[in-house]
Each structure stands twice: as C-alpha cells, then as structure tokens.
Image 1 (cartoon, rainbow, N blue to C red):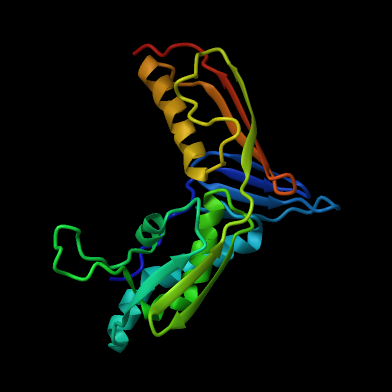
Image 2 (cartoon, rainbow, N blue to C red):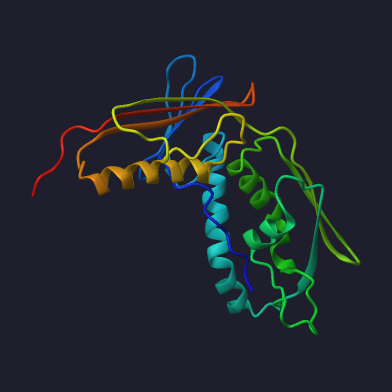
Length: 242
C-alpha cells in the first residue's frame, strides 16, 4: 500500500511577519513574507506552513507521494513492508500517525493474522518531512522528528516540544455564534479545528438565509510566545429573498 499523504490545511491567507503569523480561511492559501523594506513574496498552496520555502517543500512532497506508486510500478521495484514503531509521541497517538501514513495492518477481527503496522520501506526518506508537516498542522511547530532502521523495523522518534495554545478568542458579531465556535481558550491550536469553525459559521448563515454576509476569521500565531489569538468578525447583512 502506498503512503497516503493527508492535506494539512485547506485554508486562506497566511501572512508571515517578524513575530506574528496571520491566518484567515478562504479557498486558497497565500503566503506573504514581509521584510524590513516591505518587499513581498506571494505564493499559493493548500497547506499551512511557517515560511514560503515550506510551501514549495510540501508541494514537491505531495507530488512525490502522488507519483511514486506509478514510478515504482514502472520500474518494477519490489515492495518491502517494514514494521513501523513510534516512540516519544504523547499528544498524538500512534494510531493517528499510522493512519496518516496509511500503514498496512490486518483488521482486528482477523485475530489469527499479524497486526503489526507496516510501511513500505521505499518511502522512508520522506517520513521525517511528512510527520513534521503533520505536527505543524496539529500546533507543534518545533517538533523534532527522526527515524532509524533496525532489525526489528523502522523506529520513528518524536519529540513534540511545546505546542501553540489558544490564548484569546475575540468575537464581534451581530449573530449568536456560541455553538459554531468550537475553539476554546487554553486548548492547543489545530488547523483543522480552525477550518471547521469557519465551515460551521458559513453553514449557519446559509441555513438562516444570509447569502451576503461580511465574515472575517483570523488566527494570529505567535511563534515566540507559543500563543494563538482568534479573531472573528461578522456582519450578517440582510436576508436574501428569492
């Protein structure tokens, strides 16, 4: 089974400055690097990253895993399934990591078979980068990932380090959004939770008949303070009549 690379984030604008990262959801992601002389570099991608170079790295990583099965079949290289063992991970379970890379594992009900999770050894060169990007999407921007091959299998060593925590949630809205905002102060910032929040708000507006609201959702991430500040602004405008 080839490795399944999951998109880490499907959101909008990411503005990188000297200290703060500004994130707001949209259909695509735009990264702007703001330097002292106001020069800007804009790139577009589908993931959340710390700087512009990581977008290109993730893009090539995605292309690699997307095309590797075809290349391997064309070259008729043998598949070598190797046991994979995770160590050091605490906040993220081993089962989540296994699912993220698409390990081969016999179903529980086939109790007579080997249930050891296995991964194609041909993909080991990209494992560190894949897990690092995944941990960033989970709020761990300083996670250290390494791996080593032993006679027992592939050991993936993880040091999660300190995560980004939501410090403040600011909401300015003329519509009650208490049920739609699924984030909590003091909890770890996760990209997928932030995206889900915006989907919840949009769904409520659509269900109530507000088809042209003014909505802004941003997450300001301080990589120095390990803190996130969520800002939601909404003007529901008028109801639409058809």
